[in-house]
Image (tube, rainbow, N blue to C red; front, side):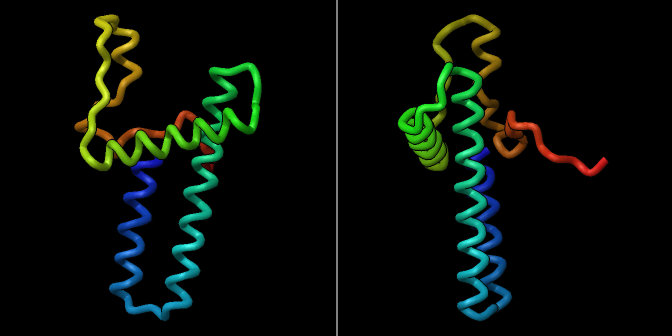
Length: 113
């Protein structure tokens, strides 16, 4: 999810630069994207902590955020993390690297119904 949002942010950044917007406007867009990315990162880390830990210790949340960023950076560089275990249930928890852009957040999203 973070990898996808970073890619979207980079695309949007390039798009705004091609529109030759003023530097102030570009800075506002970039700051808003950074804030959005940080909010998503916080939400994902909190969701993982809620699901897998019985506490919401700030240190645990920060470690999760660091782990998410590290794995995202590695995936950007082409690293694939694959399961060693033959158990099908464990293998389902790993992403399909040919469809990374289709991965959705496990956090429930607000929809317009």
